[in-house]
Length: 72
Image 1 (cartoon, rainbow, N blue to C red):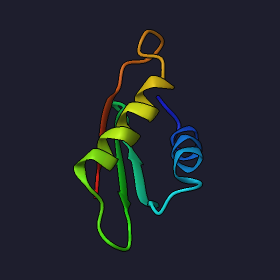
Image 2 (cartoon, rainbow, N blue to C red):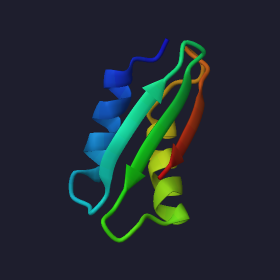
Image 3 (cartoon, rainbow, N blue to C red):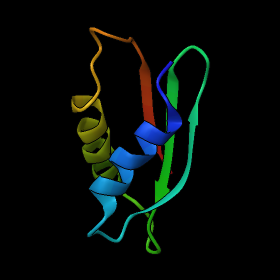
Image 4 (cartoon, rainbow, N blue to C red):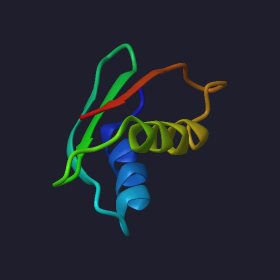
């Protein structure tokens, strides 16, 4: 199972110098990862997609399969 702390670290790295803030992270026992983020002005689909790509590229599907969802 992918650890929540690992996902949180990746998200915080990505949003460190942006207006995006982390709302919540959930990781189910079947490795369904849900990341909730937002900004004070509202977040765009493109911003969610960029974060999705960032996190997905830093996880290894060969060692552990997962489902990833990023939304607000």
